[in-house]
Length: 489
Image (cartoon, rainbow, N blue to C red; front, side):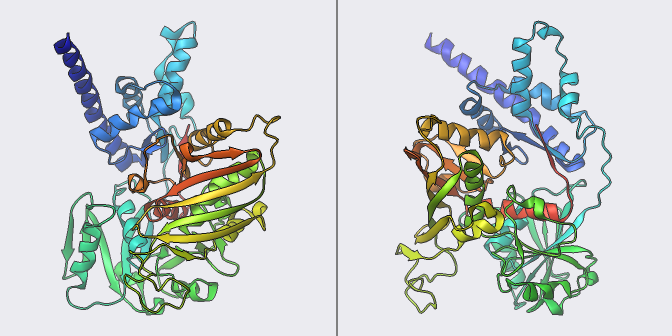
């Protein structure tokens, strides 16, 4: 009996692996040739391994209440691969669950046609001509965020890709600099090795990564640059340096030939729009030439706060961020202009200030004056947490407000709301910060840590302050470029 059971398990696993391996070329081809990104309950399957696809299918049980088998999702993916689609994201997991639910409840389930179902579900993106030209992107600065943005854009290279990483701009230019820049892109102590091939073209001063030709330009100031010399035009410059945060400073980029728009990867000052994608990206106007992607913490907390405020109403609250140390701090004790930040980052928890709580209102004005905030820097290199202690406008008896109902609302928001790309959700009792390295959502609600007492709710929200934030930045770049990426369903 044990031998028979083992044979069944082995056969079942081999079947799943077979379907996953058959899916891989279709997923790749759909994106490379048609800019169609396949998702499964919010997880991208682009560049996933066969094991990643199997794990993504297993996780569906947590959200849908029942498992989704690869042999069930395979027919949908195969049918989608034969359709003429414009650039979009298609969640085959959600579509499969919906399709088989209709089959189980329909009196004529045997007659339910898969092609007709998909054509109806995908009508917004079906048989649409894609006439949009690719947009050039330049990374000004190549630190933590710059290199992660490079990885994200390189993994999406293909003939249908709408954002082309054309160049990076850095200071320096000393002997060996190019090789060191390439090495930092190739190897990352936190995010692991680059998924692909990287070579250096010393004659042309460029990095070649997975077929992408990335010009490396040395400059100390934006005014020195003429991008048109490198065939770059109408480009979006993503400033990762943080050296200029106001309109006057960032306007220096616009003086360079070949630049159309600028995005700052830090909170913008003055009248610069601070965009948290998913919350106020609708404020991006085609005439905007300078925008800010706000901060990593603002991107993590604002989507969750907006969802809660619209559902329950937030009277007031406090946000405490437990944030990984950054390059702004020192490895060992040394002078720093800010209080406490001069103490050794790998050895201390450091209380410091954060403007994220106040910055929320720049993206979501309804919370103006309702939040206070503070921060603690801790000795971890990446992945942070925001603790949201909120007083909500609910009557726990009348509204049946409790931990379960709050978690259910946030789980549904992570799957089916307009914030599904920003909010993720975990029900794990064992998850810790290192498990969340590489998370693409701006925030991950830790449902097991949720506390509800009367009308007060305390939420623990994880966020990869490097990778998750970089994904948010890229979403803003996409909107600045006018790339219309519909999500289905």
